[in-house]
Image (tube, rainbow, N blue to C red):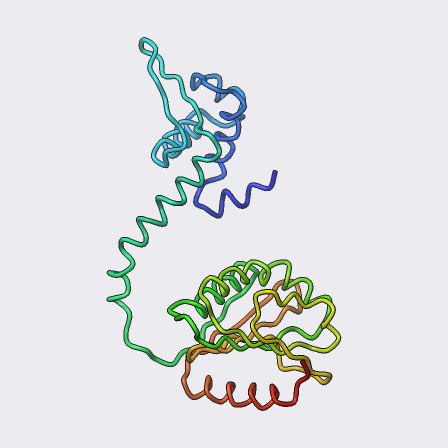
Length: 239
């Protein structure tokens, strides 16, 4: 099992090892867990206490002995929902720390970083906002980006009811899944790098190398320049 997902939601490696073993053991004494998981007793107790704090382990006392039990795997989804709700409660306060709109450039790396970049691009949008993008010209890079990121992005843009306009390389026409795109057109000459243009922000991403990298530009002037460039090419593109 790939446990990196569990690490990504805030569980330590020891907590993951203990939780998975407890799922197998069912209701157990600490000694049985220690014997099976292969960690020092102090590490196991720390992991158990951390899991209790997260609501992923419970215990009962039979006499003076505690018996621990892992919650069902669905409890992890509940844990994430709780954390999201807690974060949303403090989100308005966090925004007060931010200055007014300023120009900036931010750098992101890795698939997770690109997802964060696009989340920043898409936040604070309204129904009917125009989301313009240049797709990826290289077929293998196109498939990689689609599978890793953009297939996951479609429900978000659709849910936000954005008006999307995508310019694709002609050679990717048969691959392009445009079900969540309002308008798609195709060009038979080199495209700019994979670029997204939305609400005074421009995201430029490259999928070459070992992992993708991207920059997010916050600038009204640069945004308007890219919009004019996009619309110029849009008129030349084919449906």
